[in-house]
Length: 275
Image (cartoon, rainbow, N blue to C red):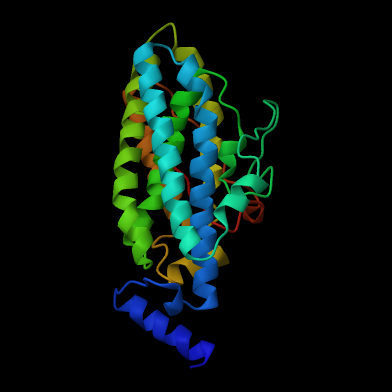
C-alpha cells in the first residue's frame, strides 16, 4: 500500500467517526501533527507544575498550601499521562525531560508576545514567573480556563488513547478553574485587594489571549483535517474571552483588554495547549 493510499484510508476512517488507536494505522503526516500537539500539552503540564511548586510554601494559608500541592500534583500527573502516550509513539521522554529546563522563567520586564523563550514545546505563558498570590490566581482563572477551552477538542480526538485520558484531565482542570474563580471574586470584591487583582488581570489576560494562535493557520487546518482539533484558533479564543468577561464581571472588576495584532503572522502557527 502506498503512503497516499494509507492517507486516504486514514481520512475515510476519521470521517466515519472512528478512532486511530495504534502507530501502524498512522501516516507520517498524522503522526507528526499528533506528536506536536501532545508535546505541547505534556511540556506545558510539567512546566506549569514546576512554576507552582514554590507556592506550596508561599500560599496564603495552610489550607491553601494543601490546595496548591494538590493542583501541582494534578499537573505532574497530567504530564506523566501525556508522556506515556508519547512513549508509545516512540518519543524518548526521559531524555527530553533531561534536555530541557522546565524551571526556566524570563525576567519580569520581558513580554514574549507569541514567541517561545526556549526550544521546549510548552505554551509560552509558562515562561513567565509567578511572583504573587494574584499571579497564581490568574493562572487558575485564565490559563487553566484557556487550556480547558483548547483541550476540549481533544475529548473528541481521532486518536483514541488521547481521547480516553482527557475526561479525567478535564475534570481536574475544572477544579483548578473553580479555585481561581472563587479567589478572583473574593479578591476583586475586597477594597484592600481590588487594585492589585485588576493589575494582575490586565497583565495576564493579553498573554493568555496570545497562546491560541492566529486565525486560519495552515497548521491548525491540518489538525482539523486529521480530527485532532475541531475549531479554528480564533473561535476558541473568543469563546474563552466571553467566559472570562462573565467571571470578571461577577468579581466586580473591569473587563481586560486585548488588542488584535496588526500582523497575525507574528502569532504562532500552532494552536497551543496546556494544563
